[in-house]
Length: 198
Image (cartoon, rainbow, N blue to C red):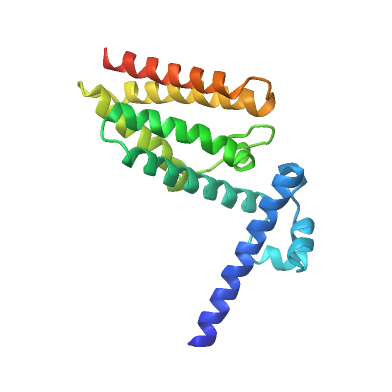
């Protein structure tokens, strides 16, 4: 039994090393530079070993994308839980989303396809759905009227379009001072929240 546990632990450690190596390459050289050969060189294994864990480079990038969504969801949940009022929860979650985009810039680029093709999921993936679900639940709570799912979805995409657009501009062109960006972000979030309550 002990050797079976050790084998499982070693497999999980190898899998983690592969993902860490891919993330390292993505951060240092960009996602296009990630290859099975480079990963193998970093972890000092042969490339065929990596194929025992992941079918191809896309599978590795998909796993890193899920990891990014997990980190984002955890941070957003903490931001939401730090506030009682739904309006404050919504603002805190979007500010957390903003901060995540710059703290985990390369993961964000991978998750949302900025300067790289993002991973496309064939089916609903819980990790990917979690951040949007949290935000939609708070939007629904703020709107409180006869709840129309299409209206909640529309409000979510209004928020996301503005926040993601501003992030994308700043990731590609970093010439706007932080103070202006944050004020535009807060003004926009506040304006959309006020419109939802009307």
